[in-house]
Length: 235
Image (cartoon, rainbow, N blue to C red):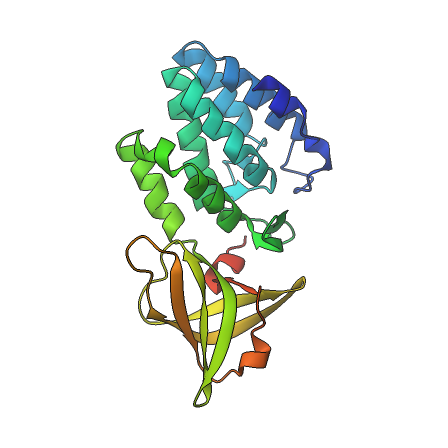
């Protein structure tokens, strides 16, 4: 696990110059991975919460948190119980904190400008079995992650003046009409009225969304939708 931590160039990850301290991210993660009691876990957690992945005083989250989340989940799975609790607490804090307006997004395999909270949520969903097995706290993290949904368009058809978009939905898009971000080729547009037409059924991820006042040509295959409110979460 330490090798994976050291393989990250924490200094190359952008962050607020007055708050983000890359050395704290690396040192804190190494210390938390090695923690053998509650005191050591608390000391490691203070490094990470004091400028490593979040800045607790300002309730800010850094892009480094999205990179650190899978490492924290590894610690939760393999580390001392005190380290596990600290790791889950840090992920919870990162998911609920707001980024500084100049450092709000990260590059992932499914987008080049993904809101930090959505990237963290993706990492949590990837470890559903682990978190579900960690009791109430793990299940609460999964429930929070579900609010940061993502929809990938596969195909669209015109429906009167609207468009029916078919694709895959991860997370939980609630009922009603929502503003969403449309990510296409590195560009972001806001769609003001999107609603869940048909939810996933029987364990499938397949769903259909209705996009009001848009034509199919505006919603190409492979485009990805995120909650607009996630992109607006800033200090």
